[in-house]
Image 1 (tube, one colour):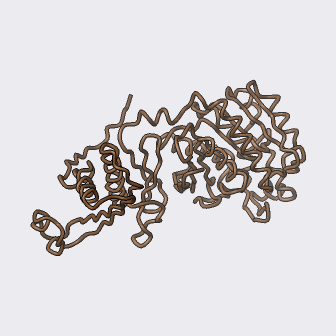
Image 2: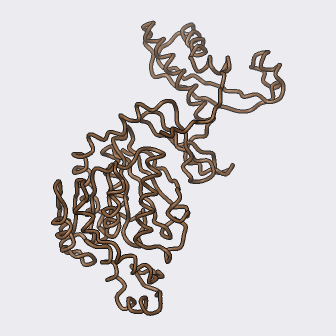
Image 3: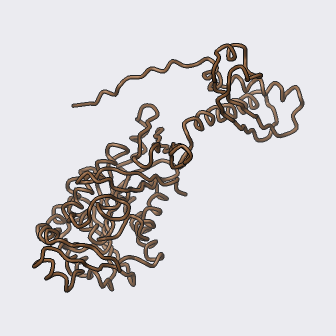
Length: 414
């Protein structure tokens, strides 16, 4: 089971906001992976979705994003090239490094595969690279331009139809591709490599897989995708590739346990994701949560609000306190629950508040806690349990108030 995905943005190579999605496991995160999609595709293609799902089920968080000018990302696609894709990948890795942990696993589909191979040496934390239908050289993509190739070279640009969509391809794109020799990078990779390729791939021939595999040093592996097409458009083919990557990667990610690093993190860390106006991710040890505001006030409603978490803290603490008391006293009670409502009320109208609260004047916060008790419990015991509810630590903190000290973070410059 996977946790709710986090939609976020970060700045790409030219400052454009890149749309991204971070899929996290429903539990401790062993490691993080970075996924690069195929040429003119997006982060939401079937292969990307399936692979992210399989990896999160294995405890690996996956960041996938749209390159500049594609999908939900900003920027002009016509001005991009293979070098800019590499810069976007480095920006994505840096985002993970700053906000979570650097990626240990790099995955690339088609030209995205060539891109992760080319950039892997610049991401030292990555220990393994997996490619799907990747070309052995970046300029293999020019075969997609067919008759438009001469127009691009003679006139500087041309409208090219790819997968039923029209894209402007400039001559600088071709010139940039010729500068990158992926096979040379593979020979110096220094990381575990998995090459997945379909023998019947009509877009990127199987000979590319042979070239990559021969160029690579051990440890290296090859897995045939049998009758799959280039885009893994059959969900079963995408699921198979995803399962293979997840199983293969587990061998190399054991020593790079992100959850162990998370356990050393001090405090509750809240960071904006860049998606929407208010969305932030909350990191508490190995746990990941989203916080947001309702759409009515400008949020995405992608997670509980800060006050919702406050009410949850009171409710959870109450349930735990009552359970401890029941076990200590040997009380045979059923399941315990709480419902907590929060609202701002005028102090003079709060008839069930204390005199101290009413004396404050103006509006005050009122938390109403409803305790649900099941089982055969007599009236005296029920009354005592309600008294014990008031003794939960979070209740006492709220009643007594807390000293909140604010200071600016001091960056480590060493």
